[in-house]
Image (cartoon, rainbow, N blue to C red; front, side, top):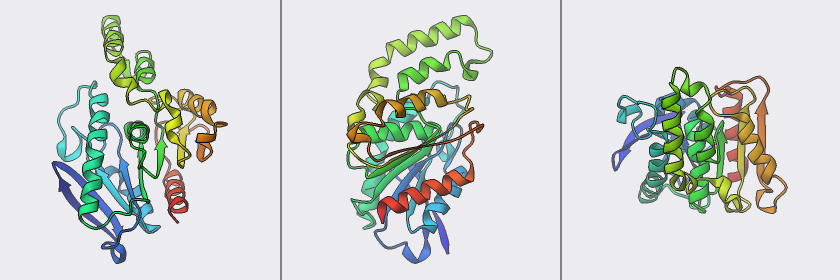
Amino acid sequence: MIQIDYREVSGVPYAEVVDASLKDQAIPIVVFYHGWTGSKDRVVTVGVELAKRGMRAILPDQLLHGDRGVRLIGGEIWEIVANNIKELPIIKEEMRQRGLLDEAKFGVSGLSMGGISTYALFNQYPDITAAASLMGNSDPARFAKWTISSIWMTGATQEQCDALEVEIEKNKAFLDAMALAKHPERINGRPLFLWHGTTDDKVPYELNKEFYETIKDEPYAKNVEWHETPGQGHIVPHQVFEDVADFFQKVFQ
C-alpha cells in the first residue's frame, strides 16, 4: 500500500510518498519539484509512480507556493530556484537524520520551474546520483531573455519589456551561477533524463533540445537521455511520469 505523509523540516513543508512496507528502510530517494503556481499535492501522481517502484518520493512546497503560498507577481522564479538550491541539503540531512538516506541513491526531478530547478541543482551538487528534468531549461539568463517576447509577457508594455531586459542583464552573474549550460562537464557521466513537448509555449523546447544536441557526444554526457513528445504543450503526460519512475528504478537497481 502506498502511504502519503505530510511533514516539515526547517520551514519546508513536504509530502513523503512511499510503500508502507518500506517506509522505515533506506531505499532510494527522489526529490521532485512542482511547477510555477503548483504545490506538492499537484505532483503526488509522480510520487506514487516512484513509490510503486520501491523509491521514496519527497515532494516539497517551494518558496511562495503551497503551504508557503502568497500572491505571486511573476518575477520571483529565480529567487525560488536559488532557494531550492539552498534548501535541498536541508531535506537531504533530514533523510540522513531519520536513517533513511542511501548516499549512492539520491535523485532530483521536477517539471517546468521544477525542471529548471533540477538543472540548477545538478549543476550545484555533484553528490546527486541522477536527475530528470521535465520541460526545463539549463540556461536561466537565456530563458529569461526568451520570456520577453513570449506568452509570459502578453499585455506588457514596451517599457515593461525594456525594464525586464535591463533587470536580466543586471542579474546575469547570479543567473549564470545556476546554469548547467555554462558548465555541462559537471554532469560528469551521471544519468540525466530530459523530456520536452515540442509545442511548449511557456518553456521553449528549442532551447532545451539545443542544449542536448550541444552536449550529447561529449564523454561526460554519455548517460544523458533525450525524450520528446510531438505536439505536446506545457503539460506532462502521465506516461512521462511513468518513464521517469522507470528511469530512476533502472539507475538505482
